[in-house]
Image (cartoon, rainbow, N blue to C red; front, top):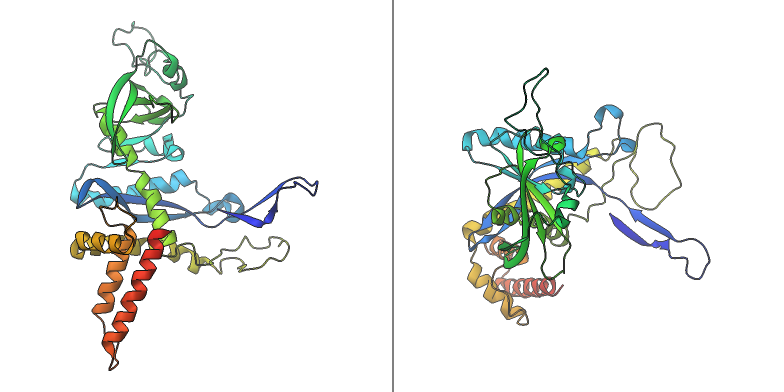
Length: 366
C-alpha cells in the first residue's frame, strides 16, 4: 500500500474536505521458515518458501475467491507433506488475522500454534469430571471464564515478574498465565493464555495463546518474537532486491466498466497474470539463496570489519547485515567471472570495487 501524496489533499486552505489517495499493489500470503544465524543462534532470518496471491472478491470470479486464512492453511498443509520425511516438530507463528479457527482447528496435534488473542475472546474452563449423570451427551466445556480484558484487571490472577529474551534483548515483563479452552478457535484442544504487561508502561498489555499448555512462558514469548524477522525480510527485499520496483498489474474482470484514464500500466483481463505471479516468488527465493550462499561461503568477521571501515560511525555493528552479505556475493561473482577482458583489467576491477564500496556505504547510511 502506497500513500499517493500528489493525489491527496488536506483541505487546509481550500475549504474542501480532506481526500487521502492510496495505491494498492499485490497482496500475498507467505509462509517462511525461521533459520537461526550461525554466528548468533538467538537471532534468525525468515526464509520465504511458499506463496499464494490473494485477490479480493471484486477482482476475481466468485469461483476463484479464497480467504487469506484459507490460502495460509493450504500452504501449511504443503509444508506438512514435506515434513513427513524430516519428522521435525513444527511451530506455527502468525499475527492476529491468522489466529482463527480456519487454521487452528485443522492443525495436527503434533503442531504447536502461537498467536495473539483478541481481548473479548470467549474462554471456558475444563468440564468437571464429577458431572451429574443424566440425559444427553456430557459437557464439552466448563464454566465461562473472564475475557482477556477482564483477566488483566482481575486481582485473583496476580502478575508475576519474569525475565524474557525478546528481540535479542533480555527484558523484564509482568505475566499472567491461564490454561483454558478457547472453544471457538481451538475447539477442545487446551490452550495456554499468556498476558504480558510492560512494568515501565511504554507498551500496552498484550495477550497470546499457545496450543502446547506445557510450553514455558519464556519460550512462548521468545518464539512469538521470531515472527518479526518476516518484517525484516520484506524490508530487505524491497529496499535491496527491488521487490517493489516491477510495475506489474493484473486487470479486472471481463465486461467491467473502466474508469477514467490513468497514467501507468493498466492491463486488462488476465494479461498481467504471467508477470504478477512469478515476480514476488522469484525475488523472495533469491533472498533465501543469498543467505544459503553466505552461510556456506561468507566471512562474517571480514565483512563486518569492511563495513565499519567504510562507515566508522556504526561503532555498535558486530554482525553482518543482509546488505553486507549481498555485497559479498556481488564481489565473489565479479571476481569469479571474466568481466574485464581488457589489457588494463586491474584498473577495471579497482573501479568496480570502489563503486561497490560507495554503494554499500550509501545503503548502510540510509
